Image (cartoon, rainbow, N blue to C red; front, side):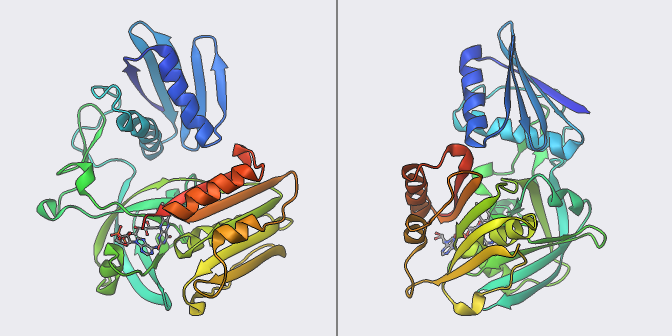
Length: 334
Ligand SMILES: Cc1cc2nc3c(=O)[nH]c(=O)nc-3n(C[C@H](O)[C@H](O)[C@H](O)COP(=O)(O)OP(=O)(O)OC[C@H]3O[C@@H](n4cnc5c(N)ncnc54)[C@H](O)[C@@H]3O)c2cc1C
């Protein structure tokens, strides 16, 4: 096991509250201990213990990429709340690229259906993108830092040339992985003004791209599942359906703009797929409102545009779904 540790100069109760809130959001297991907490994340474990001057965080994971993903999961909420900006992590490979970043070469970029490109990348350690997170980020440097890449500083934190906010880091879903061939595929929904769409239009084999991950959620699990999403969520829905056990049941409802984008998706027999066409059919939130669902062993998942997702999240609460039975994820913002 690899470890990294830092001292958070925070009142222990505030630190514990922050960690528990983060864990509750992702339905992560939390173990209360005499001197603090233990959290189990997809990449490893976080132990938080009272110490003179604050709370000692100790992160353990089986490799560097996982350890760094775990650290990022802790750093992100602290940074968003502007807490302990001077924290230093003990595991620091100063000057190295972040261990969860991988350089990939474009193998191909083809039109899959009228609105999608399928991009195939090849590179080292793609097998790690087949576990613990369905998603990754493409990294596009700001123009004035073209050709530069993020590196680790002596505090074990990632430094982004020009500042992280200046980078375009869109999230995509791993659609297929072939660990033997060392390839990974993802599907890009082409939309007007999209910087990734523009990138795909002229993409040539051999082009280099850096990706970071994996991250985000892992497969939701329940005997019965209802999945709702628009074009950006179609790849995630396809992966979740593929991973469902044979005896799984449920329904997937997908909103598309062009009936030509309908795809065959591998799924258990007792899962139906309903395609809605924008402008012709009622919307995803209306479909969610009309959903008939069992009273237990169920999970309702929704991903799409920010305002729609917010409406879906409210509706799920009103329909009596517990936090552990639902997920509403913002995939893009209009
Ligand atoms: C967890 C997660 C997984 C995702 N997986 C996928 C995936 O597998 N495939 C995929 O195609 N997308 C996916 N997305 C959505 C994708 O990250 C966003 O659509 C992102 O904005 C695309 O970046 P861009 O550079 O094309 O557009 P940007 O340059 O970020 O945005 C340019 C303009 O396009 C608009 N825009 C962004 N998305 C859309 C859209 N869908 N329709 C219409 N206008 C839009 C923006 O409002 C903005 O005005 C995912 C998002 C998340 C959070």
